[in-house]
Image (cartoon, rainbow, N blue to C red; front, side, top):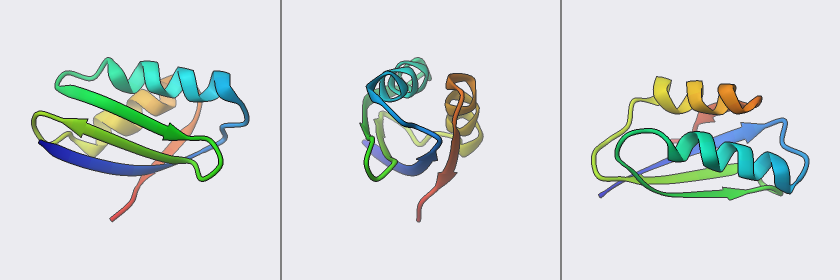
Amino acid sequence: MSTSTFTVTGMTCGHCVSAVREEVGNIAGVETVDVDLESGRLVIESGTPLADADVIAAVDEAGYQATRQE
């Protein structure tokens, strides 16, 4: 299992969280997606490591910006 953590900016409500969760959840190999509105923290668990660009593109598709946390 691989865990990736990102910071998402631009979210303001529960609908925002749902949009990010749905788009990121569509990435192949993603098992779970946890999005915290207050902190903007996005934690993804996947069967294999994900490409940062895929996650950033999915968040962008939802209408927000993401940056990788180390």
